[in-house]
Amino acid sequence: MFHRILFNSNFPFTKVRPLHALRNTVQLKKQAFCLLLVICFVVNQAFSLPYHADEMEDLAAFAEEYDLAINFWEVTMKEQLETERAEDLVQSLKEKYTSHEDKDENRLKYTFESRHKNDPFYVIYNVILPLDKNEPAEVIIVLHGTEWDNQISQKYQKEKTAILKNYLTKESQLYTCLSVQGSGIMNHDVFINKAKMYLNIKHISTKYDNIENSRIEKSTYGYTKTWEQYYYMENTPKNVQIAAVADRQGEMSYMIGTPILINEY
Image (cartoon, one colour):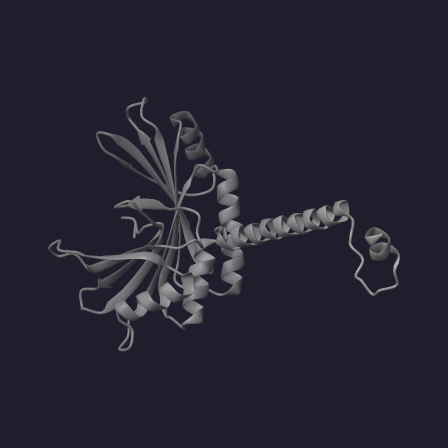
């Protein structure tokens, strides 16, 4: 009787959903929640990955953002090659440029320079051939300029692409440096803070240079996800170095490089 009253009466009871319908609803909600988690994870990974941008373009944009006066910029590409391939490269470069040779008891160094009066930057090709044929040869190619604008940027990209295609491989190491002038309101800490904000630099540490007659007063190291290359210093990733440099007159300039400043500068 109670069963008849409950399900056949006209009282405004809320109809009870079948059990399988409830289960389907719960399952759909779980699937939607899992899908949302996946989307959030993908978005987070996309924003946490390196930008894979061109390092020189980034440094030039940094200088433009803060109206910094550029002293010079330099991009160095290095790679070890088999001696036979490096010798072929020397012959190829001799057909285009005048060579200079420097020899000692360990190696023979060829230097070629691509410099024209109206070019906004020049390129130096160094090919180092070891006298011991069991040792690898090394190619060092340097692009160097003192100005930067959109036209220079386009020419730089074209030149860099041609170098990587014709002379080097994906195994080459890339070092990028920008030097800017100091001023009355620009000191090491101010420059560090600007770079830190613009490039989102983390894991910052500073070391002072105690070497006699060194022009570098102190160097600051850090890490940014903006660039892919990095190394470890004291178990911490690093790929940015900033140095305060004094010239013979005591005038200060500031250099920022990735992944590290190298001796060629």
